[in-house]
Image 1 (tube, rainbow, N blue to C red):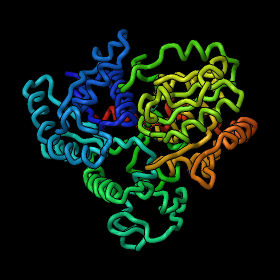
Image 2 (spheres, rainbow, N blue to C red):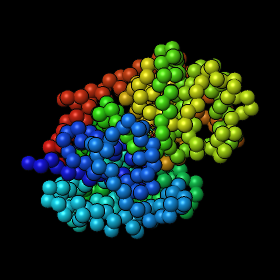
Image 3 (cartoon, rainbow, N blue to C red):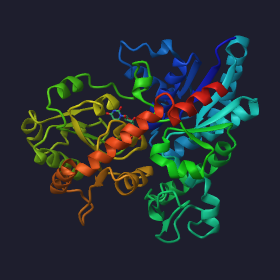
Image 4 (tube, rainbow, N blue to C red):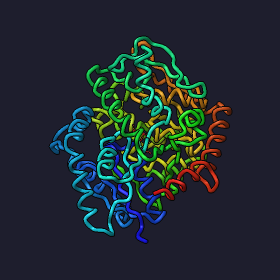
Length: 452
Ligand code: UDP
């Protein structure tokens, strides 16, 4: 019998491509033939960022489709990008699958789409192909999407997603409490963008609900209350580096190869790892205050400073900062984050609380100092600080700035709090057991593989 051929399609953003690529490599490890579809723009970035030694393409066929925008267009305007994708990509995907299916031995057995690409599930439905929705964020937030109609009916949000008032809601008695102002579309300041994103989110509910399987990069141990209330969402995570056969997972930037050697030189449990994911942007003052805060801690730090993290990044540091900290810390443009977090010298993670960063930090038993910006990061922060109690939050002053002294003081509190460390180590042990033979995610993943 031929190996089943699976096609995966992520939303074109770093925090979506990485976990789906982890899943793709995991499936390749189980003997599947795998085709991974990026937009042309993302495909080029991924290929350019691959280390020369990485032969990921021996395991996965990487293909690309146009997203309908010009190469010079700004793809950080999510609304414009999503509308263009909706216009162009369904037809392109349909044609790609028809081409592949032209050969009997290559036929696609199953399509796995990021739930935020719900249209791809509709393409699979029309073509009579098994379809799986993959949810790359907290399962509680998918449950929240499913609840939108009743939130509107109950007068909690209006039909554009705007909260009627600031209040606390709980989707089920076992789930975390959410503040309506923190719902992930509520914390988008620009009204038009908020409305558009809410509309796009509403659109993905039907195809996601009617997928043949619904899998999420989470663990029973992280969100047991949600999985108890929504048994159709199957946690298969955390999808870990250890399962990707030593391959890189679709980074958009080339990783700094020296950071691991630098970590080797630091004492155990000493380094502050600072990273804000792939698209959070700092204004100049806040960037400088963070730099001075890290200096003030007097502790070794590894800080990911993406080229686009602030305007004119090369001239953004406070005067003399780079010389003063050269024996204390290291600024790098991109790191293999999972490897960094698993390094014994790392003690704490200053994080924007993206979901991938959240589960990667927990999988490595690292407590958090939380610095969320928008979308699901605010919910994830509450989850880390109030529900799981494995981190503390940084507070802004009256001018909306997180000051250097706040950074130093909170960091000392995180590092001195044995309770935080104990809880995160306990959670780490549980979720890692979950992906080992006999564990809940392990079982879900193997049932899923058997089903395909
Ligand atoms: N990441 C990385 N190197 C870096 C910074 C981030 O590999 O220097 C990865 C990180 O491990 C995570 C992803 O980028 O898998 C970011 O996803 P997340 O959900 O945390 O944040 P987003 O970028 O979606 O805001």
